[in-house]
Length: 588
Image 1 (cartoon, rainbow, N blue to C red):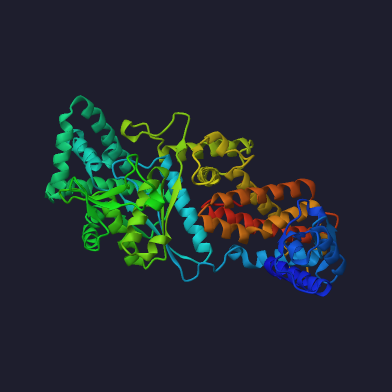
Image 2: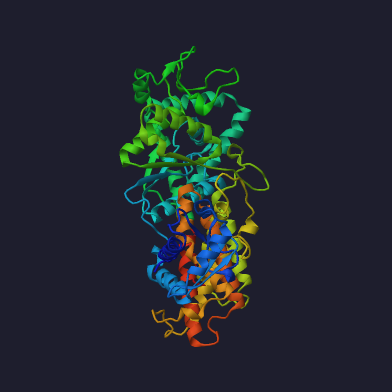
């Protein structure tokens, strides 16, 4: 019996009792957990029944509790004010759930709620004139974790990356290399490709301050690129190729995966034909300056400061497009290419108004799927130095941050291994998993909309609300299971009726919550719910283990029962961390 089936069975028994003693079945019942596990394993509130039966919730709870007699499932039912607290037979409570978790393994917590639905998660959207920074890491962690959660709930997920590979900012790096690169390459200089190109973007910014004429030259280069000048296009391809090689290294190290890439160089002309169709349908109009505009719905957007209707420009008077123009075309292209039910954009909060306008335009054009487009907005990430400014070369570089975090993890590992028993390769591997996992967990542990002050030292700590704390709980369980005798294999004959103290109950209740927590996290596109849940599960395990021995329990039967409980906890911890894109280690 699964936990969901157990809850259903309890409610059926209460329904029958209510029908018998009060003459009709209850219209509404809610089941949950008591604040203290010692009070019971489940609690049913009787508030919704007061109006139906014209009695106080406490009276109803007392009547129902008296009617519920002990059986193979319910051990005891006690009225506590307006609640019915229920204790369940331990073999049913612990045995059924632990056996189910162990049997299902990584499939535990998954569901088919998204079966038959196709969702695209578009994330990262880097520029090919500079390396990735800390903001990209937050974007990437969010994108991958949301994709993981959607897949775990049965959705067919397409992970997409819209690369900003054209425009005047790309030409700035190109012009700087052309002027001052002296035919050097990432290989000749021993520099990662994206960093190599990024250095020339910074160089351009410095030189432009001294020579404003460079702005005219870079605009001319953009015009040459748009005209298809062979030499400029060849330079563009070469430098973008260097950047892509560099990006690929960062993607691999941080665990970022993509199924499809879209490139602005291929999409920037999209949308004009859609705008023309919209003009014919009178979705768009022309303002006094000759701009093609969309009048924003007053009900949603309100009015401007002059009390006029707000509008957004989709074409300039000369017919050239804007970002929103190509975004309209790209949105339609994605739906057409992949037959999507949902399209999720992981983009910073500064673009909230842009996406609100985009979705309103798509809906006005008659695309019903526009209502299933979602902007997963996220806040800024700060270090003590303040906001990142790439044009000044003051970015919080993603590669440098990952490397620094891995070094911090390595120092912690060496401190915990003073006798030097670990091989160097093992130290390096553990440090990589812990360092990268620490970044991801720290970036995902708060709501996406919330800005973050990233503290490297706090994030790598093995204590507190961190990734390493949760990873260590998993490794601790793995160590216990490794020490257990091979003969102590999980079996259906394990006597779970021996379990039931407060810490065991608290841990079991945590394990039971994964399916519901995952469902809630997916509905809100909010991985922080999983991060909080996994931290609380790790904490519940540590509280149990610090108070109760496993391998040195009073007798062999209790040892086996506790091994079953922590084996189930290991499954849940691994599953939850993996949903966040965080790897686990068998030993730390």
